[in-house]
Image 1: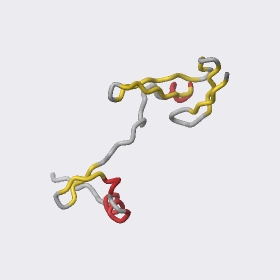
Image 2: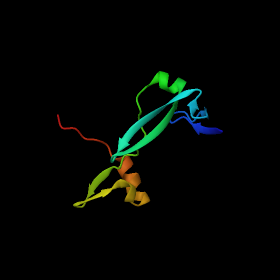
Image 3: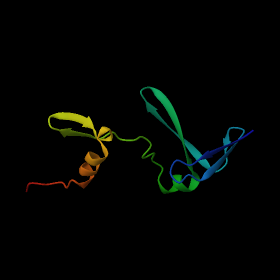
Image 4: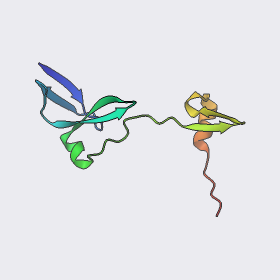
Amino acid sequence: MQKEIKCHDCNAVAMVVDGNVTNGVFLKYLEDSKEHVIFKCTECHAKNEALENFKPIEVYSRVVGYIRPVAQFNTGKQQEYKDRKEYKIQ
């Protein structure tokens, strides 16, 4: 039995034949005591062995006293948030 899967980083097609990976590795991580498995091809794993960017980050912002996820903002407010510049006091 053959199963086709894609690399987490580059989306290159990898092959698993009878449970054996032919050109990559599986990486595991725990989330809320549940185990997840991600595949990385040999080339991407050689560049960076760490598992990065596997989970979307939820960004919150305070608007008029309320803390809300930026993803819930309307389109105009999301664009305003992207256009903001960081101000640092020296």
